[in-house]
Length: 96
Image 1 (cartoon, one colour):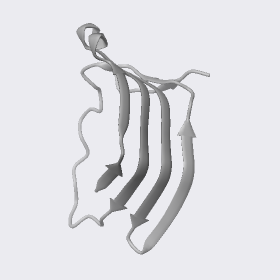
Image 2 (cartoon, helix red, strand yellow):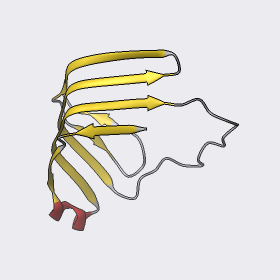
Image 3 (cartoon, one colour):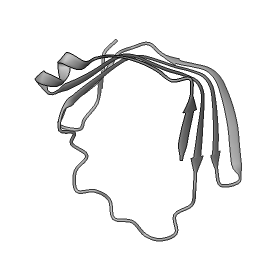
Image 4 (cartoon, helix red, strand yellow):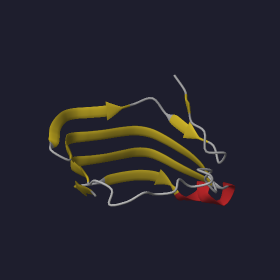
């Protein structure tokens, strides 16, 4: 389960006409990720290909808290500023 507070998204809606999702900036004051154990076996998907290309610019989270079973942690000042492009084939390419 993922929850986030004070989320801000800067994106280019017109890029959708070119089958692209372009997010210039994505941020949150606080994000919480809680992973729960699986109750049974799951079958992986046959493909992770996306129906459109995705470009993400700056990402920032002031505080990230996580929990996976008995383990938990906290990260502050998380930031990614190098744009990442995920083509519709499902692979990722990070430009530097």
